[in-house]
Image (tube, rainbow, N blue to C red):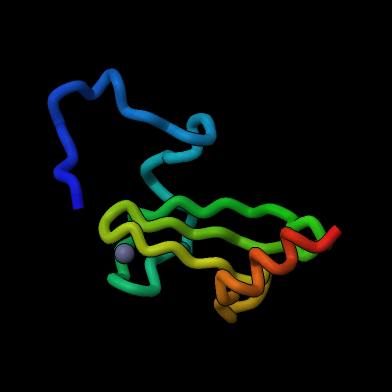
Length: 85
Ligand SMILES: [Zn+2]
């Protein structure tokens, strides 16, 4: 693991625009560490399945889940659905 530099805050890279907002919506928390500092994004996969992507700011654990369901979705399944054309 490379050390992250805190030297230049103006150069923080945000891959998908400004999705990393502090203060997550109610109910979102990391399944790994329990932190509520997570980013949750709702989206539809290529096959139309509505899913929620949760990314933890603390431990970088990432979770996919079916929308409206507490069930986590294995990454394999997500990639499979995304690949489906
Ligand atoms: Zn976490």
